[in-house]
Amino acid sequence: MRNIHKNAEPRSLTEHRKKLFADYDNYTDKNTLRQSLIDEQRGLCCYCQARIRPSVESMKIEHWRCQDVYPELQLDYRNMLGACLGGHGQPEDVQHCDTLKGNSDLCFSPADPACNVEQKIQFLGDGSIQSYDLGFDNDMNKVLNLNLKQFISNRKAVLTAFQQRLQAGKKLEPLKELPKWDGSQKGDLPEYAQVIVYWLRKRQARIAK
Image 1 (cartoon, rainbow, N blue to C red):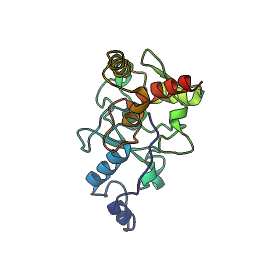
Image 2: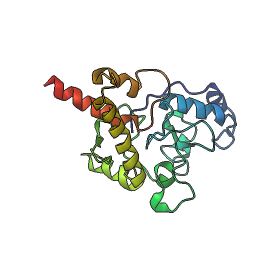
Image 3: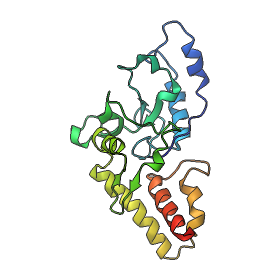
Image 4: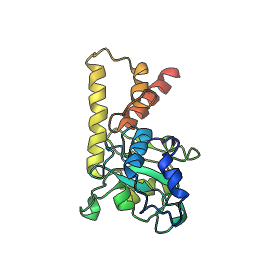
């Protein structure tokens, strides 16, 4: 997970809210909405950081506070995120992200500046993640299933490949690599980018001591 900085909402959503009886279901410009969410999340799922594309076959429009319990937020752009399909249709033990979350509340939002999720997550060497905040840690594991075996393996593979490139002398300068992974540069980020961000920041901190 990484911090998400919300951009201005699509104009079509602003105009739709002005209509009588406007709700999320009768909002017809969801393609524009998907693209807007993809752009601000740099092509990654808001929770697991897997690649998502702006189509119904690739992503869900996630309501951080669910529509069933918080209908007053169904057209609030600040409440909307782009999520992967989350193992939709699969057994519950392999579901994740929005699909497993359902109507559950999370104690954090990656789009809430006050939360700063990047400061709450530790990426371990084996590819798993944890948090010193017990509520946050519970939500990552029980509500979002972010330590699913496939995620642990994928995060580990990304970090291992990056470290191997450094060791092989591929002309990588570690201190100059961070902007390629933390969103400072334009365009989509690599999948599971925050693993490298965490590792590079720890490396910088050690060098600075």
